[in-house]
Structures are given as structure tokens and as C-alpha cells.
Image (cartoon, rainbow, N blue to C red; front, side, top):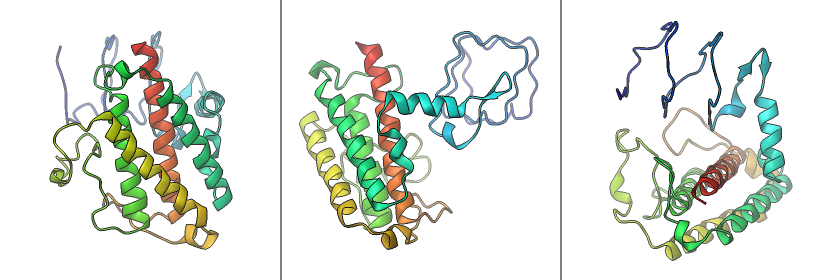
Length: 242
């Protein structure tokens, strides 16, 4: 099967009576795509950024419907956009509890199992260590080297020029992953315990070097979004693996 990677040759193209049956799109931009009179049986879309835009199906923007259903499936997820210290503390308690439930309910033989090109539970937890390091230790606390060596970096980071020598080459034992993850969760708990409205309003820099200058509150909300999104991914994959 032909693979296309790193190309923009299809931007603005028109496809008529063309079959994409069984095709896979990963890390690709399909924003603004228009489909008319198409067969969509079994079409599976997963987008971390879905809530920030629109997805129109038969004239209906289904994003609010998807968000409402995800909030029903993941009680406490609706708190991730809270603006006050009290709201963010409650949001963190909710997602931390949800993660504890998932970890406790996962058999040992599945912690390193994964679906196709997705991360395993162990890799997912390592990525959340990295996310907390980036947005709490890096952005909020301005640590010049915030990353723990077991962090799982995102796909394409090396091509972006990120220093991969920060991270351990070999996978960490699961017990170590759990211990470091618990330490990072406690750092967030401790930070939120004394956070004030004034602190949440302070401006910070994007830890990945982007043009965005988030507030401290924005950084906390990114941590919450990361936790909820990856909890959804891993529960989806664990259900398939079982």
C-alpha cells in the first residue's frame, strides 16, 4: 500500500469517485475538508483538538454532542476548563482519581501491550510525566531543565531539533514509571494547594518554544487536558486488548 508522509500535494485537491476505503491518516491536517455524498460507514475519527473547532455532519455541528458524551463517560472531565483555584483543585482530584481506577484495574500483562502504533499504558504514563514536567516544572516554575529521564517524548520531537539525550534510551521498569508518575501528580497537587487567582493570571512562556504566552492557569488546564485525553486513549485501547 502506498504511503504518503510530509506532503502538502493534496491541499485544495478534489477527489471524485475515489476510494479511501481502509486508508489511515495519522498526524495529518484535514481541517476544512468538505465531503459530499460520501459513504462513511465505520469512519473512525479521533482528534485531541476537536473541542476547539467544529465538525459538521449533515448540517449539524456534532462537537457539543461529542463533548457532552465524553463528559458523561468520564465524570469530572467537564471541570478541566475551570478558571478558579478551587475549580482547578477539584478538576485535578477528579482526573487523578480516574487514573487511579484505570491503573488499579489493568492486569500486569497489559501494561506494556499496545494497539497498532498507539502507546501502551506504561508509555502513556511516561508521556504524562513529560507533560507535567513541561507545563508545571518548565512553564510555570521556569526550571531550565524540567524533564525526568523516563519521559516519553511526542512523535516528531527529534525532527524538530529537540535534545533527545535528556531521555533514557531504554524503557523504565513499570514500578519506576508508577513511582515517578505519582511524584509528578503530587507536585501538581502541592502547587494547586496554594495557588491563588493572582498567580493563575501570571503570564508564562510556551515550554515548547511556540508563540503562545499562556497564563499559569492555562498551563494547568493543559495538564488537565493531557491527562483526560490520554485516559480516554488508553481506556479505548485497553478495551480492545481485552
